[in-house]
Image (cartoon, rainbow, N blue to C red; front, side):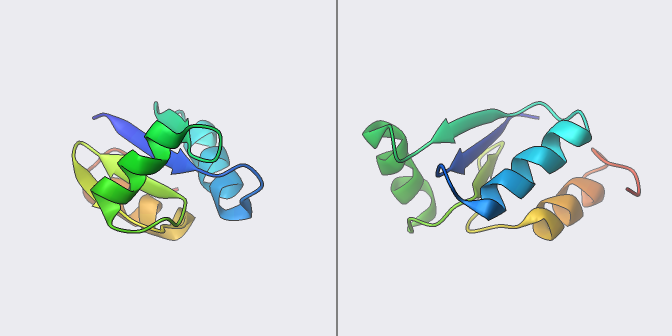
Length: 83
């Protein structure tokens, strides 16, 4: 499973999502969009919006997500076990 998380520096929801992934030892690639216009353009192209955190998980987009949404998604796919 390949996880990309689009973030913005200073975003508290992004900080929470990153901490959740790290705490649960889930590999991911972070793409911070404020400092990188290519990543920002990717975010808009993939999700149709500018909000973060947004996840690209093997091509499935979870736009403007939070920890609960990513947790539910990963539980349903068997990546996580009841946390």
